Amino acid sequence: MTVIPTRYYESINQNYIDSDWTHTCRDFSKVREWASSRYNGELAVKPRHRNGTVWEDYYLPSEVV
Image (cartoon, rainbow, N blue to C red; front, side, top):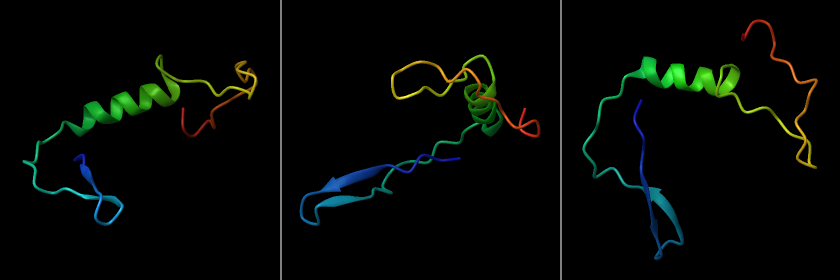
């Protein structure tokens, strides 16, 4: 997994891929653990209603847990 940086170019008025960077290898298992923890672990962010209260009846599909 590699982050792909972008750079804003005023001449074309948009971001464009800036591939002039050295690749850094990542431990994908650590990235996966973090993502899983954010989805259904201790770091999970529960959805909220527009008024800011937590959506109490939120549940995860059993095949994802």
